[in-house]
Length: 113
Image (cartoon, rainbow, N blue to C red; front, side, top):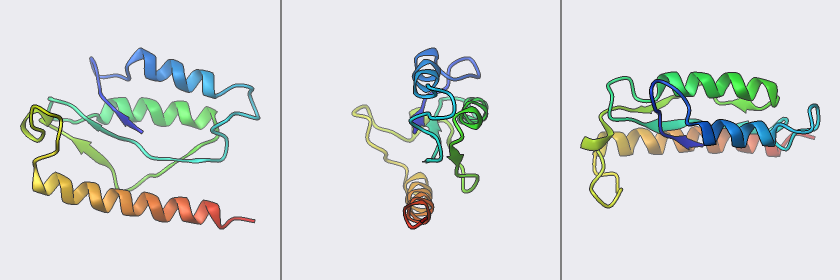
């Protein structure tokens, strides 16, 4: 899940979507599913606070958030072009490693009995 961060938090629309997907309690759509969190922000902390809030929300849905690696893209306005394409090579390398780790996590869930 890729998120922006506004005022040190999760956008209300994103939180509302997770709240709806958490129903019915105990049988939520996201229950038992792996979840990844990445985000980009113009600030220097990336989306650390927003991701922390989402991790708390996913505890209720019984989703499994990948703990490491984390991807917090800071100063995003310097790493993407005007068309939204990632232009920063180091961030692209981190993204590739991150996606590979999440694919491995997803495969472990698919192989469960």
